[in-house]
Length: 276
Image 1 (tube, helix red, strand yellow):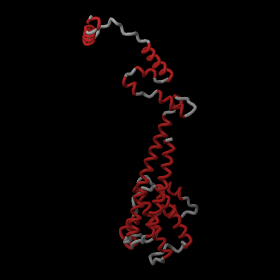
Image 2 (image 1 turned 180 degrees about the vertical axis):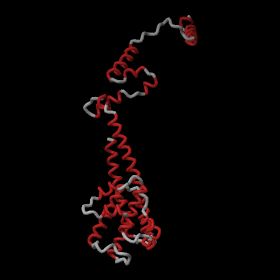
Image 3 (image 1 turned 30 degrees about the vertical axis):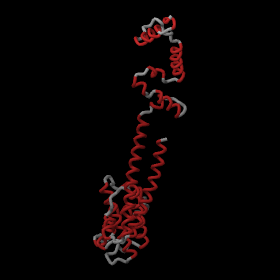
Image 4 (image 1 turned 45 degrees about the vertical axis):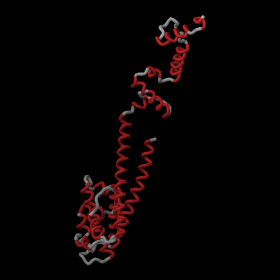
């Protein structure tokens, strides 16, 4: 039951994470790119990506998952560096296609259709990076946009969605850690299922609860040895009642208290027989 509950919580938090990421990405896309960032970009997309990344994107048969598997993403710094390079190349390609940037051309052998295709591939890689590494720090492009942003509404939405994204990612990580530890505990101790060969979870719970120490075990009460069966309890209490019912009468020869002797002597002196 706890495992199913955790799975439901994980799915709910995952929905919050996706919504926060979508809101944050939408807000950042609406903020204009500052000119200071554009001036700092290389002359073309290939110079921004590097030869190896550029060749991986411009191959004939492109697979984004296979492309990421060939990249060195062992540290957060390397993932962030790849994200910065891809975002810079996307900005360069968009400006060359839509705004007819007057900088050095991309080359006479590259057509407009291929440029659009390569841009779509780069955006696909960027989306995969955000999905696989949602807890990454902000990229250089995002920082530049937020620093030069003057729209209060965009600033509030961006900060609020980023906080929700961070919180949801942390909760998701902790839930996954708990589920992973639970799976390891189940695989490392298979003898637990053999110890209690019951047909249902209720039988296993009943057996485990019967072996659990109770308060009477710690207090040293005599009832502790009879707690595993209700029949034994009935026999125990029945025997106790029988002992009380079979208790012998108090002997008349028992020693009387001094107060009782005084009362009897006084009553004897005041009896009618005594006055006669």
